[in-house]
Length: 179
View 1 (tube, one colour):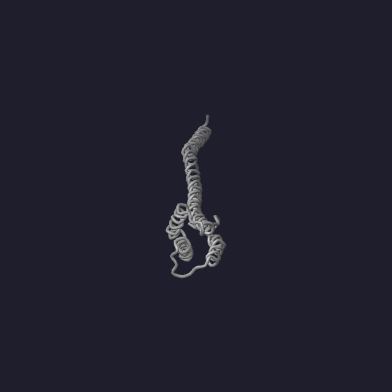
View 2 (spheres, helix red, strand yellow):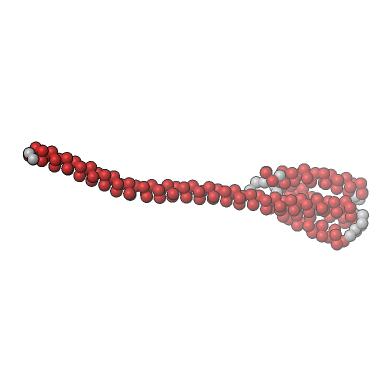
């Protein structure tokens, strides 16, 4: 072999070794890069999933809070409506136990309303309870500072029974319940 062919052979051998070395470098790069990429991808996916589940949990908690608020507001409405109906039915046939329970529920509704409604509705609820109790005293216990006729009472009661659902409408629409 000539010197030129030996040097060409060595040059080719070095090139081949360099290519092998470069392939090893590429392989070692991918051995490092692929696991890091997979871990990074899985980390990003876990983060996004956690955020999505957290957002869904927040929506669920808000809906549960809306439902509890709705139930409390409806209970107040129901107690006041029962109070007005009881006044209408029992105004001349006084049954102390039923009326006492109804008055207690109406007073409780009046007290709870302060935390659940705006001031205008709270004042309206208080006026229903106070006027209802005063009418009961007038008709059933004979305590009359002003002479209230049965017609005036029935007109007031009918007006309240009609207005009450209208006044509560914005608070009893589940879609509009604000937290």
